[in-house]
Image (tube, rainbow, N blue to C red):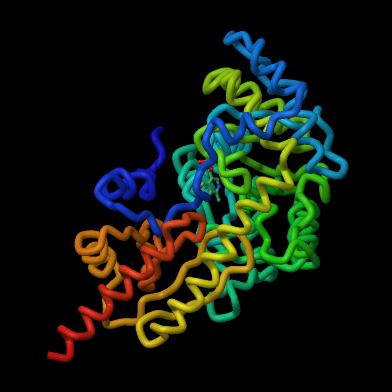
Length: 378
Ligand SMILES: Cc1ncc(COP(=O)(O)O)c(C=O)c1O
């Protein structure tokens, strides 16, 4: 069965090409091919120059798997599976590996669509546990516990969080992982925004290191600003789940693209430099966003993010967010993402802090708001 329409992709399909300034993207301005090659060490350059464009190893290039495994404390390269369709593929495979008719899954809400729209198509029921907007997007662990049932097979979480920028404390995250382990539920921890914590001390341990049955999902698209490579991965010591996911992968991408694997290796070996580049862009934009929302406190409710590159402010009623977004896109070429793509109805929208064009987008939004205020005052 085909999963329910992916609303975010349909929204971008409809609006993206006409909008000059994407102020809601979930990535950082991408690196050029030349910039990645300039980062390469001697071994990587040799691999690149002699690269044969045949099939690659289905679990991923051994050097790439080793490099990815360096992000984990106890989960080794054996537990890493590279996915040629990004983290989106990893999440698709994991849902299929874990869920079937009559099964139940819990997802922390709001959620990126791969975390919850696939399960119902597999015949599984999904319960949502909402982050508390009024309390800094706090995760309610009691609510997670209460949502678990004997038929619960998977718990899907995503921290740092899309779209709110939420990040639990280390103690809360450890409790969440333990809670799933004690209940015998496989935790799928979408960690694609990991390493983009505003304070580096807030980086959470990977779920796959905290518990042998949990799965961590990572990607080249976010901290490394290389979404076009379409390289993601899953990391776990849970052999059963890894085996099932790899078996399914034989019917999806089979293996990753050979050039993308080598480019990923180059980028991962330049981890510090690339993460610093992404954080510099994000933190500069965070300053611009804070100032913008302080200027317009009567128009928006703003909860600052703690990590990642996304925030989920609220447009104060009676203004209506879909109308606001449509008019802003048409009049100023600035695109925001309505909360409705996350199935929320409280007048929120997603703003992205990863593009260097954000200050210009905010300036144009200032002008748009001034015009609206002027028209309302007439
Ligand atoms: C939380 C989350 N998980 C997974 C993905 C998928 O990443 P990719 O499209 O690079 O595979 C995204 C992309 O925006 C995301 O926000």
